[in-house]
Amino acid sequence: MSDAENFFAVRSEIAEKLSEIADFKMIYTPANSAKITEMTQVTPNTQVYYRRVRKVDDAGRSSINMLAKQWEVTVVERHAASQLSNGAEALDRAGILTQKVLELLCGWKPDSSVRPLDLVAIEEDYSTTCVYITLVFESKTFV
Image (cartoon, rainbow, N blue to C red):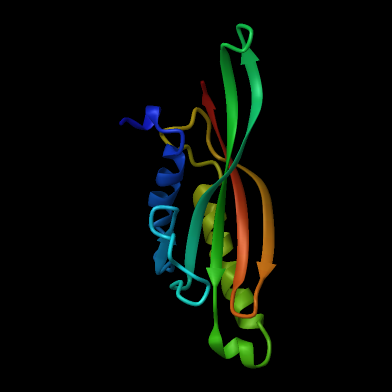
């Protein structure tokens, strides 16, 4: 199967591109994360998942559609020592990794996208053990 035939091809391309950031000990996708829990995940890591699709435009009575596929790229950092008092060190480290992801992916064009990636959102979440910073990117394709 070629990338042109794979709806999720951009996810693999993003994961491969993220391997250029040496700080990440692991890059998780649905292919390798099915049995991973918050406690067993290797950190720092990044996780790449499909989020949703939205129709941007169409032509020929919708026989050709431009789709914007959204991809979640989540930076995950855990710092055991920071859990004893506060999470400042883990937050700082997550911020540094987030900046590296932004610099790497903003404006980069995956082969399976007709346009460079667009950053559409940045979200944060926390648990008792990890910091999660999710960057949402859109790729564009025609179907």
